[in-house]
Length: 397
Image (cartoon, rainbow, N blue to C red):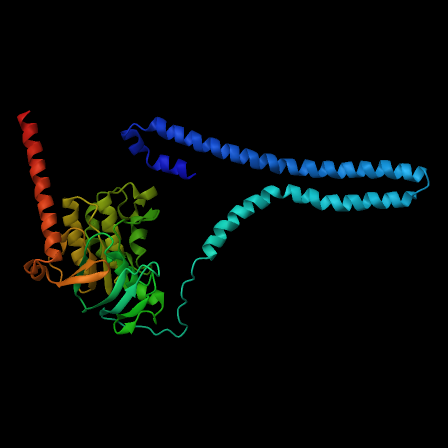
């Protein structure tokens, strides 16, 4: 199934690189392996029942023949032979049934392995029954000596501390694997801390329920996720009690309304599988509108513009600016040009904050942020020169 799904989903790429024959050969090879394994399993399973029945019948014949001879010679009574025959049937019947269940046992064993693999995972720490609640929180976030690692012997974040005031926009930058996404996942309580604590409006989030923490936090991910349904339903997913007026206001504020009006059914347009009837940028705008209608006090934007073109990025920036207004915001950025107006920039390396400050302060310091910014600027300049050279060559031709 995985091979079929992979080949079907990536059929365009397979055709682009001319790998149809290779893909077909791999499928046939794996299909042949599956056929042989299934054939052996079915053959053995089908053999068990006849074998048990043959043994039972053989014992029946043996008892009847030997018992008949012994009755004829006076060594046994006929009733004793009859009893032996009944005992033989009672003994072989369970064996025959067990043989018929061989296929079920094999399938159940394979399923049990997957089930126990899940059950062996560490259980989530339950929420406290008397957990406090936050009333009308302002969105103050404070990390106090936070430590975390995905494996006990491999710490990722060590002694991380900082404070974010209400309404501030905090940008988190750094190389891949620095711990940027991990930091916001800890804020959402997707993982439990190994040390320290995270405060939301002065309250330790470990003492709050997960639902309470996440209901106050909106998140826009790099890969937009939309489910089968109308555009209206996808936006309302952020707040099931939102009225049509609130949905429309969220759509206008986040620039969704601009492209929705070009669709035949407007907000009642049904998104097909994988929302293929809207572009990548439009998908991202819909997820921003969904977060907007949820009206969270804390907002997390996880590289929301990293996979779109420059024109779409500008549109997304306007939408995210409307979404961030009046909210404490964490922005994980790949393109540093998008976070120049952030109130605070945290530069992370190996799970630690190595620099923090505004864009101008960090550029003036000529440290890690300055090196990242210069590297991106030089790469962008090189790409522009290459594009310009290509255009000149085409014009000359």
